[in-house]
Amino acid sequence: MTEALFACKPEESRGRLHAERMSSFRSPFQRDRDRIIHSSAFRRLKHKTQVFVEHEGDYYRTRLTHSIEVAQVARTISGVLGLNCDLAEAIALAHDLGHTPFGHTGEDALGALMAPFGGFDHNAQAIRIVTRLERHYADFDGLNLTWETLEGIAKHNGPVLETADHPLPYALAQANAEWDLELGTFASAEAQVAAIADDIAYSHHDLHDGLRSGLFDEADLMSLPVTGPAFEEVDRLHPGLEKMRRRHEALRRVFGRMVEDVIAVAKNRLEAAQPKSVCEIRAMEGTVIRFSKPLYQELKAIRSFLFTRMYRAPSVMRERERVTAMVTDLFPLFMAQPDLLPTEWAEDVARVSSEVELARIVADYVAGMTDRFAIQEHARLFGG
Image: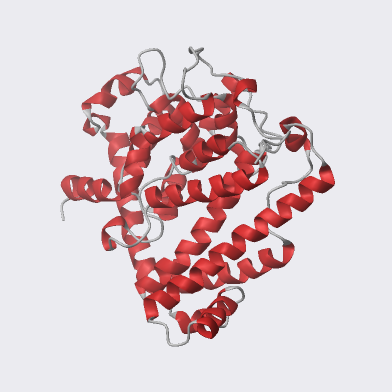
């Protein structure tokens, strides 16, 4: 498909903080994508959880498999709409880099511990990782990504507004001071695609993982919007289909319904708005990439079901309590005894001049842990 006028064009990129020679065989956005894939933080996503703790089963999604699925959806939608697929993919692959071990449970625990020190936000932490914490290149800290990729990571979920009650997360404020990411506007259409692809991917795979875990079954989904009609269609077309095939066929229809809905809505909104540039996309009063209102309401019903039957299931809540206790033990221990941090962190610790600065270093370390490493470190340091 011909590239749209409102697509981000690599040759028009606002560039990088540290100037680099252009690659002879990769565009700037392709180079961003490749640097994200080769980063240490991206590899660690292999052992970071979505809902279930990483060791609980080989079939459950991890942050890594989730990010790959998000990138696939983002490329599909971007291609249909004439957007830059490489930029959408880069943002999709990076969107979860800042997540803690143990999913949102770990983030909640670390956020509570960091409340006296400026708080913790996984999107801001992703920016901190790609601008500072990845230290592999001779000429700069971080990955030296393009402005467009950084913008997408920072505000793919919408404008980030600072108020007296809600100041910018420290990492985001620090990055914005250097890059001016225009946090008060919407992001590019490519970043919006990455955000909706995230919604599509987790809505689909949480249903799949919940079924596999036995927290609910297909009969429960028959009474819900979207999933119920999907199972009914499979039963009509393939009566008597084996259980796992029936499940797969139904859920891929759910997946397809979401993707098709987003594409149809985007085409209609773009046709009505007739944006001539990415700047016009950013200046719009709302997102151009979104679900239709009917489907959005139906997905709310599914998410409400998942919240009750999966995210707050008794077995999941017991595990949430266990892993929250681990994070709550580790953080104050490292604050009291920073010499317990690995030797490569000693130089950073030696430069701190306040408890707030030390807390950010400890948060960087704890947030970077995988599920299995956090469990191992807790056992080593606390026994049991």
